[in-house]
Length: 195
Image 1: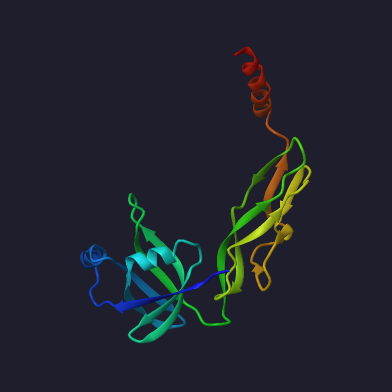
Image 2 (image 1 turned 120 degrees about the horizontal axis):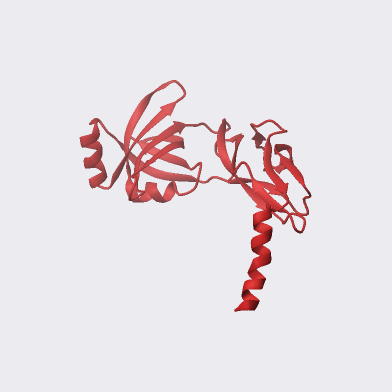
């Protein structure tokens, strides 16, 4: 489940690429807080604390801006293409008890029946959950699964979370290995014996 990270933010009045670059040189990350019909709030966040806080998906930050608390969900992270440092954040204001839709990872548990192959079609799925209690993942148990498809109704969701996906949406497929894979598997022991 998500944890709230408390971070001191400062409002910013300078906009544009030049001021954003200067802020990053000063160890700060430009960000915008929006939502609930309020005017967007442009802030600067401390780079080190913020980067650590947004390592997990769907991070929730408790920002202190001019003495006022703002609980915000990270909606978008813009990263530097080479260094992968955080360049900018879009934050959505959330309230205690409010439900928000987020994408969460599908965690696969178990092994399919012997001789079969599992192909995961959806690595993430949309979930509606309490903004301050967001799940890290949903579970797909494939233990002993036979040929066929595994649909969204097979996902195990944490308490209080709702799947925002059709129940018959295909999440994974259990199939026989392709002919090439079987040939490679058969050739590998033969090559080992030859050596």
